[in-house]
Length: 234
Image (tube, rainbow, N blue to C red; front, side, top):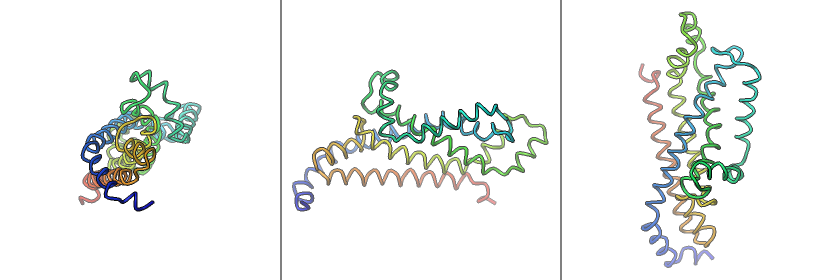
């Protein structure tokens, strides 16, 4: 078995696929990951802010019933396995992009799966803000919106960047699974060649490239978080 996997013919096939398909597949993976994470941040950031400021002792208390529903919806979406969520999102993807399969269509379930995760990450980042700073802003008569925009978010930027890095690497792993429903990228290559055709060497090459992308995103995120941390500049 191993002789066939690592045979000269298998290596030749892998090199051919790498040369002809991997560049475009890598672009598709990066495109889907970045776009999905961007939409997840657009939806998840305000929800994460509401989870913190809307509490009873928050800077902008909201009705208890609303906060309960918000928490339940976020927890519910986070608890659904991504593979099942992809299938459930078929009608919505078809309504938005005109098809339920393909690279662009895979963005829809990726956003649905990731924005509740981003909301919780944002919530955690905002909770790390020193409450004394918020109290000082309140004592100076700052409005809730000004406290959120000028105090809470700026003070939590390093943590937000670190958590967004976690989110983008998570979306990257989800994007690999989208190959099951016809989504493009490295996940599609790994599934089509490694799973359906038993060409494990090609699958291994795709996995190695996915790991490399994770390392690149993680390195960029860590560097940005370090540069934005005011405590390290003192």
